[in-house]
Image 1 (cartoon, one colour):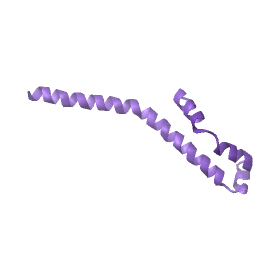
Image 2: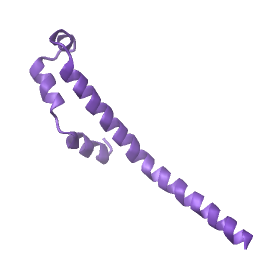
Image 3: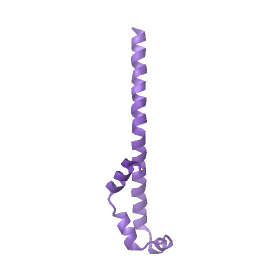
Image 4: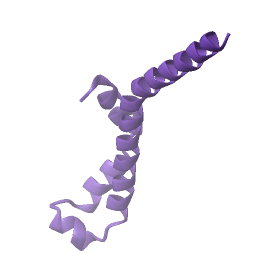
Length: 80
């Protein structure tokens, strides 16, 4: 009985490890997506002189900040 119990525990660890390894790329992509979202918000909050240093104007910063997240999500899910 103990050997079956140990086997079940080992199997559950294997299944959990596989689930975690399958979810890891998705989690990493979502982290990237959130980081892009935060950077866009910061970009929208920058003063004009900082935008000029980056070669951007207020309209370009606003357009980037308003870009829908699902465009990036589609790119990330394709692996781009």
